Structures are given as structure tokens and as C-alpha cells.
Length: 221
Image (cartoon, rainbow, N blue to C red; front, side, top):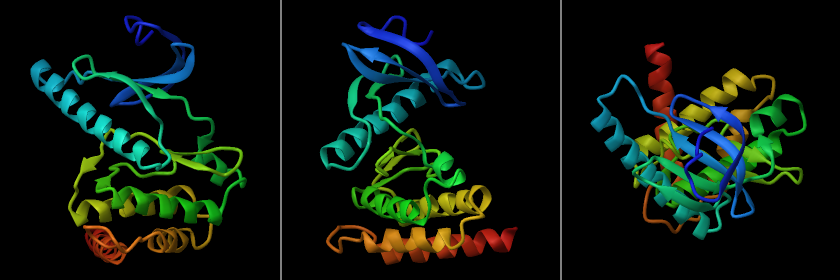
């Protein structure tokens, strides 16, 4: 199983196997944890693949460290190895918001909270890169935690922030179309969390760019 050579790591089970990484639950130094290990991409030259893996993991480490220190709900970083392409994270209790929205245990309030959480992320000068309801966990008390920053960017352009909202818009439209006003509520939540004191694009600027992106998508469709 992945991570067999990592000291003090005891694997339990694979909880996600994607194109970019494999995520395994287990324990590390007696603490519940997850191991995220980047998967080699066979179509790339090995040297290029190692370099890209190291770059992306380095960004993910920086993002997680900054967000956690800023009290934005994310897993805490326990250990990592850039050369080997893995990181150990604290295990977050909960399940994907995707599941909770689809079974009716979550609704517009949680979508609004998600929008506000995205604004907090953007005010830290990060874009997520894959903002879907699969990449935010909800616990029994309704608390949300952002996960999976493998495609994140540091100090992104306003276009990339707008693309975060566009990706989530497409997710809400495709996967949660039965929830009326989901997109509007998410945007309201995003806008309401604007601190008004950041050195970067305001919430309104990001929303305007999102609307521009959405118009372009519709035009080309």
C-alpha cells in the first residue's frame, strides 16, 4: 500500500484514487491522518514529471501552511517530502458537501457558507483550481473544511479567481440543479465575506470577471 516506506505511518485504506494523487487514511505517530501521494504520469518524461510533481506539491504545502495559520478551515500539514511526492495531513471528520446536498441534509445555508469560505481563500491570494462540492467537507455540526489544493495558484490573476467561481457554478448546475437559487446564494455568500481591506481584487471585481467568463462560455457553447 502507498506510503509503506514512510516512518511511523500505518496505512488503513485507500479513500480516493484519482489521476493526480492517491489518498490513504491511517495513522501517524498515533494520530489519525491521511497520506496524499502524487501519482506518476506515464505519458510525461520522468524528469519532467518529477519536476512538475515537486513544483505542485511545493505550492500545496505553502497554501496549506498559510491557510491553517490564518484559521481558515483546512487540514493541518503534518509532514511532507517534495522529492518523493507525498504529504501527511490531519484527518478531517465529515463527508463531501456533494453528498450532503444530494441527500437533503445540507442546503442553501451551507452553499452560502461555501461562498464565504471561497472569498476567505481568495483574500489570502490563493485560487483553488478545482472548486467543486467534492472538495469541501461538512461535519455533523455543519462546519465546512476546504481540501485538495493540488491545482492551487499563489497570487493568481483575477481571471483565475473568476474561474474558481465558474467551476463551482458548473458543478452546482450539473450536480445540484434541484436546489433553486444555489448559484445566486453562493455569490451572495462570497460577496458578503468581502473584508474590504485586502490588497487584491475585490469580491465585486471577481464576480464581474466570473460573469464575463460565464458569458464567454455560453457564447462558445
